[in-house]
Image (cartoon, rainbow, N blue to C red; front, side, top):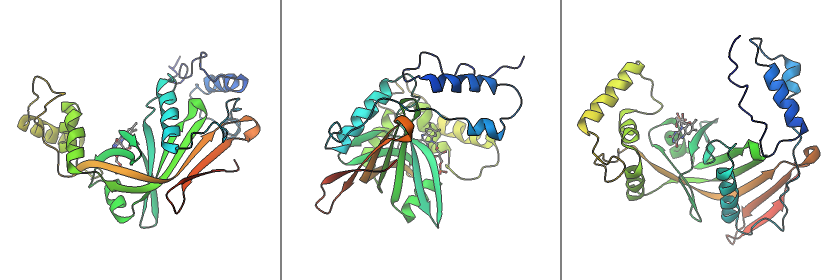
Length: 258
Ligand SMILES: Cc1cc2nc3c(=O)[nH]c(=O)nc-3n(C[C@H](O)[C@H](O)[C@H](O)COP(=O)(O)O)c2cc1C
């Protein structure tokens, strides 16, 4: 019998489980043969969302505080994998692109992630600073969408964060010209080996590392002007609360149709 990689991916102890998700589990198991899902099976994939709502009175007046409350809950939920993973949307030359990056800091200043400035996303942001960030916390029936402008953080801030990264990741940042076409996996490994030989691993690779910050690597801070919180509810009557900055730089809260 062939091994089904999905068979145990959604344990029955799941916090937000309901009847519909049990049938979904059964359906997942049923799809673990070698035959591809047909159209009707895909159409039948839906869950009934739950009890937990988000009301105007419960929502914190400050969207960053509200975000931190939800991020903490997501990080504590064992069914959310990588709670700080967010989908970064960019748009340049009339071509949108989305990919996952990791949130490394959030404050009143914005949402910070780190990357290669010469990567596709780096080039796209240099053309168009307007970006989106989507946090897809499916097991909690929650989603947050941030719209804002991305700016580079200072070199000092990037260097501070870079120094906290594991040595192998620091070497990786030097070795990979992110988003460029490369000849082979071997050429990437060769580049990594050369950099590793140049900056050998010290005894305490996590602190006081001697690997310098690569010139093309650093942080972006997304300064938000709109933050929407989505909570799944019964009968597709989901809660959508959106904070937007008004002309006086005050956050205004509105409810959107689901
Ligand atoms: C869970 C996850 C986390 C990731 N985190 C980052 C990150 O923090 N920074 C980054 O540059 N790429 C990260 N990546 C890789 C990106 O999704 C992407 O492949 C890479 O940044 C190149 O994107 P680009 O060619 O559009 O610039 C992550 C991927 C996944 C799946």
